[in-house]
Image (cartoon, rainbow, N blue to C red; front, side):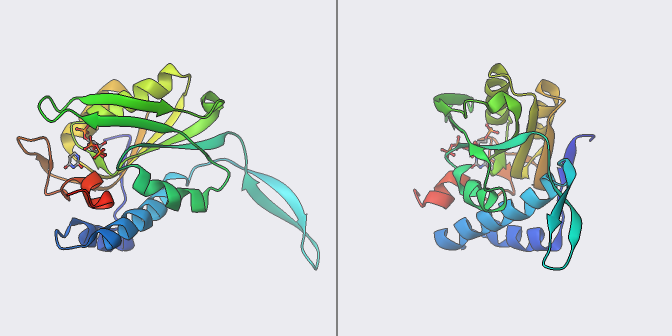
Length: 209
Ligand code: PRP
Ligand code: URA
């Protein structure tokens, strides 16, 4: 699939194994989500444009490269996406942060919007949407719809675990969006949970169950 990148780096896979384990406690689960987000961020930002500038080292003038072009925004889908934000901001401290609050209706599995706040100049930014889970894809498609409605044109989706149903939904609705995953799982179960997945990401990050 053209715009899907599954990041199978050994460190990511090792941390993912800990994340999937139902016996992993909340504290370690949170840490793993952050560490995986950082490693994914490293790959997802690989093609950011850079420009040559000069700096004076203590010895001589050096031609070096710095990030150029569009500024970045990180947009977590609440709640679970919040677990990925701090690690990303550590790597990209100048990024602005937007929030899109969506929850899945337990009956219909459709996303319900409850809060949205984006940086004022978001349309001029490269946007990284972050959420640990890409299940039916409903939340991702709604979040990207919302961002495009606010003029965003450069959008990257980062999910820790996806499945074919979610990938297909995003690809059909938003073929221009690159998707980065740490794992592409088998399928959804009858409750629209990813198999094997890791359970409910929000509950495991925030310890709500
Ligand atoms: C989870 C997850 C995604 C969504 C994925 O959030 O964090 O946002 O489900 O499912 P989808 O691809 O079928 O839309 P949830 O709605 O459970 O809310 P929470 O983060 O507040 O727990
Ligand atoms: N949301 C989750 O948190 N987990 C899933 O498996 C599917 C949706």
